[in-house]
Image (cartoon, rainbow over all chains, first blue to last red; front, top):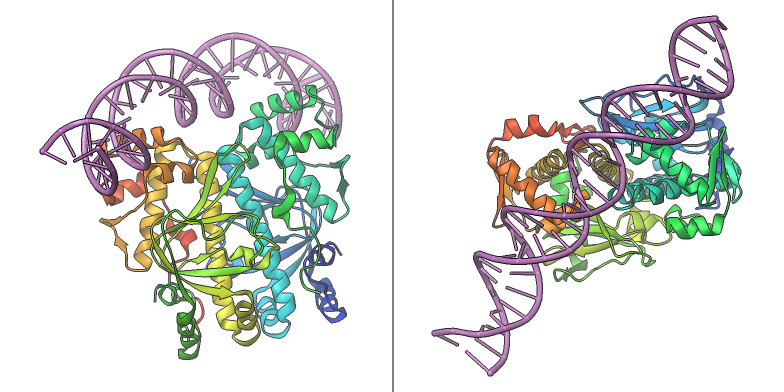
Length: 238
Length: 238
DNA sequence: CGGGCGGTTGACTCCATTCAATACCTGTGG
DNA sequence: CCACAGGTATTGAATGGAGTCAACCGCCCG
């Protein structure tokens, strides 16, 4: 499963640990695209592991504007933070139809007490998520629109590669330009303009649900993309 | 110590757990203002607890621009993320002279294995940090300059209150307008202009290192500030 | 066939940046 | 004692990047 694949980039999991993860198979649930599975302010204290499909976590402001915090792809946690906090500080919406497995608060506490290495791996995943949010913050705060879009798509590509859903040629992307706009703090109109620029420069093409990197190396250069923060360089703990 | 005070907002720590924290007293170090104690890219895997003074974590872009991710005040962790990741994804600079205690990676692993509740408290602190970063992301992405500045200062005030260093009247603030600008993704010039607006509206005054909330309630209304994400509403675990 | 959603493009507007000049304070050295 | 430099704060004028408004297209689907 994608989570095992992702966590293996950090710790080499033992057979026992993998079986703990596999045992979650029973609590599998599905949600349809567009219907939130977690609401900002709710106090469920349940997290999920995304098994298939894409989701996004976001916050709504009082005036109705939306800021997407990040997208989640298979292998990612959903609403992990809300397990520790009193209530969820954000909402989660499936971008496509999704399959998830529930992770109850009690599971997490158990993991902490009984399988410290697994707990550590989860902490790693949380740290990596935070590093991604930080990188988004930097992008929105200091990068101009074109670089921001390019950087965003390169990051998605790198993350998808880790779970075998993309490579340097590109990836299948179910996002509309509105999703992209809400994620990187631009208007959808401007995202469209920027995508045109990038296409005309021969850097990337986003069309019909496919992101194609037309010139990966030049794109990386253009976006100043350094994947170090994704921490995908191999197991730290043997 | 401020960390105990902060963590107590989440879990009621036992005498034993408090003594574990207090035992860190030996590894105390000091750093002078302006000299980074953690560099982006280094792989020390050491974290710190800030005992006194202010620090900030930031990233530098290739073109020299800086984005401050967050400020840390007494009781906060510094570079906690870099313990789990292969290398630090950000730098940490003391804003004032600071005192810290070192937390080695081994300490953290031990805490996970031996004092699960303390590990949980640390996980809570990390989740809260992430929630703050997320709120900054939302601010930079979707709030206009005036609201952003107001929101930022209200958050700092709320955080400082938790460790007894501020209240609804205001707080002592060692930040220059340049720090504020780098934190909220504006230019220093514009921060200055916005501060004038806020002052002229009778909302807040930032002068001579003092932030004074001239009309706290109206300011909260203006900034749409909802402190829920700071999760300061009291212990979750008895 | 009509409606809705997503994408595309142009014209105009505006918020924030940049450039620039001035003021103020502190510490330093002549 | 005063001149000077460096850092910070303040304000004005010009510029520009991104938003808003609006129109139009293509496609899918009921």
